[in-house]
Length: 339
Length: 200
Image 1 (spheres, rainbow over the protein chains, first blue to last red):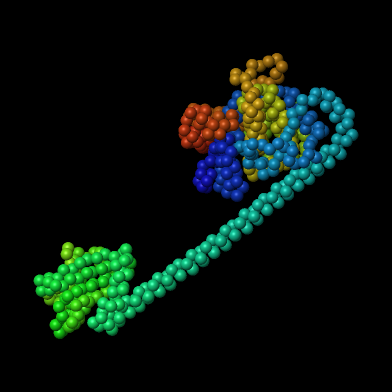
Image 2: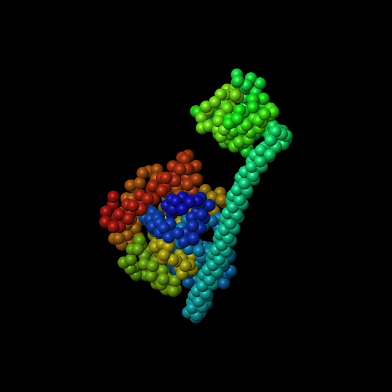
């Protein structure tokens, strides 16, 4: 229960309308030292205590007082009884809050003995011993009360210590978990950095390999292409040769895991000196992706480039451009994807 | 019977209980004089039976005599303590009776010759008591009938809000709200009365 719920249950508690579990929850809350609820309860209980004043008053029987005064006096007071003789009650009753911290010593017994006899017997026995008895009884009661108070205090202290220890342990566990989380987060960051590094290295290695192999470009990437083609993350776009290169054909493969685009072009004519082929991704306007050359005798060429925006592109094209590529296509289109 | 003091039932001084705790017989006698009518009225209302109420009162006062040293003024007034103790023990009896299948007389008892109870204010009732009695009576009577009924079922019959909802065939939330509103209204009206002497 939240504090608001507990606070809202105070008037119900004072009226005696709470269920057992709710009552116990509020009592535990009060014992935890909530001064706001404590004050509210005191207030509401003082109002609840006035309710019987709205009833028509009925006087108790006149004989009742003397009966009580007599029994309360030298009658056997269960001072010596062990403190737990009272049968276990269903629960704390409404209003018990005022005294329930100290469990009752023993139930009052309503005796059905003939009182006249009792009083007479008591008078005979007690006249001499009354004073001594009173003093000793009172002391016994006081001692008993003090013992109970001490026992109760010990119990509460022990409970408090246990609760504090538990709270400490939980705080410690929480700290450990937080440290662990930080450690894991750090590890993930490092792993990501390493991964990025490895990818860069791999790409560089590919580039170097491509450059080094010259005319035998396809040999090594073929294996990679084979791997790539088996991957479930692959998207493929085919490019057809334009009128100026009817024999040419291209395949653009995209690996969404690595965001690499692979252009495999076949039968493109040799690049005249001072020119290069340039791959374009057409979004709203063409964006240059990369350049490659076709030298004399080459029939196929592989271009690998990072292309995170692959999915956004509408079309792909390869044009012949001056060496180094152009910001916008200026030359003839050699390959064009089928849209 | 001891000589009555001018102390009002509603304002029993906590020092009187302190004297009782020290075994002061006269103080105990005064405590009885100033509280017994209120407690007996309450016991009769809950138990519906004068004899059982008298028996209960005897138990309660003996318990008070034994446990008075445990009374903590920080948790409530002496009257609040006595009333809650009496109510609590009376409802215990009511439940025990229910468990035994006892059938209470449904109509209020007719007075018999054997009974020495009578109706009317205690001779110890002061003017302050009478004024408070009038104020509380008016405050309770001023509540909407439904709120009054819900509070009385909880207070005098020891029913929980769930039991009240079942008894009245009303949603639980409605019953809770009625009790809360009723208690808040009583608090408001009686606090106002204490401050200004007027009833709203």
